[in-house]
Length: 438
Ligand code: GDP
Ligand code: IMO
Ligand code: MG
Image (cartoon, rainbow, N blue to C red; front, side, top):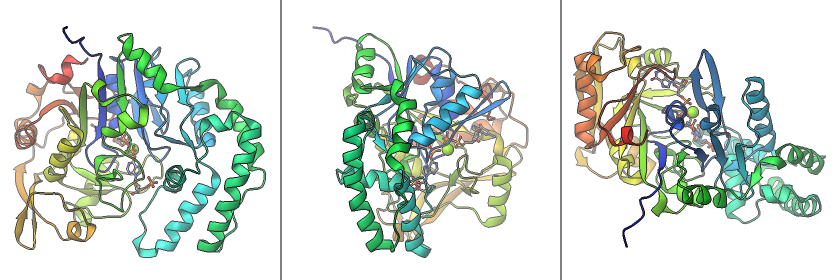
């Protein structure tokens, strides 16, 4: 029997340390998909989308919600702070975006409590110099509770009597731990009532989202999986321990949504034309301060969520090769090309050396990574504005050469080029796999 053709189910992942421009890319692609679904992370993410002179920052709600009529899912693999979610929904409403009937929250998603935030901050303070530089949103402690099997989930919030019993049991344990580890008693007064009130606001969104998405795919509807964070922040594959606490790579889409790997039909990787990182941890191609300041200013590299300045560096092809392998990237999107519009020369890391020896595998430990000597190639800049260009052939030649160099080195198609934060500052080269998904 001939195999039935599979319905379009495409994952969009960050190929670096997050903030690659996934929000913009997902917003662009979402018009060609019925659903957009978030599979990992929480409101540590900040996805910026700009169109019609309006800037939206989405944290938990998939960027696809900005496309009228399209549906969006927050999956079981996420961690949800109900107060943050309600705040985000209020902001969307103020911007005229109606979500009722088209946003669905998994009944199995984990719930973030204020004690997770407190413990996140206390753990960071205790790490001193070795702090991770988390977003202080309680993400790590919430995933810890999930894995320790003491997490409270969205379905629990909807059953007041059970919720009260479960939370009180957990609080005894959390308080004992916090006291012993940090000498700190947690603020828990009024927590049950506060969360039951928040539950009333989100009850209408709750669904079994794995059933919902699988049924949609069965009917031939298409799904775009929206990655959060990036490959190098993945809990298993990133620069551990300077990572987030979830599976940011494409495999996370399957586990984090309950959509089988056999149903995923393609993976889009998103990279900037350079590299940024927020928080601590090794960063082999990090620029010296002065150069970083220029790129930061031109690229407006300040965190969407925390406002922290992002560390800036050259594009690292070793990181992208690693990301291609781990995620199975079919198509690459290069964002923020315009940030290099005035750059006289552009460096690009083509390989790693450690103690003089060429190495071809990503080192597992941060100590080795911190000692990497990147091998650079230097390419000429173009010194011409790129925003407004709609066709690859209209890009200045050195910009096309830069993109071809990346594509050739990685043996991967570049299927979208972004030359500005706005939705329409986007170039879609012809004849790519990605174009066939639109
Ligand atoms: P995400 O977390 O991957 O969604 O990325 P963020 O939204 O956190 O960070 C990307 C930033 O770059 C946002 O401020 C975007 O508005 C902006 N941006 C995205 N694409 C481009 C681009 O091509 N050029 C410029 N100049 N800015 C861009
Ligand atoms: P988006 O989806 C960039 C980083 C934090 C910190 C580390 C751990 O916008 O790309 P956490 O609060 O998750 O425990 O922090 O991970 N981090 C991000 N960096 N973009 C993100 O998301 C990030 N989410 C977490 O800065 O270094
Ligand atoms: Mg971001």
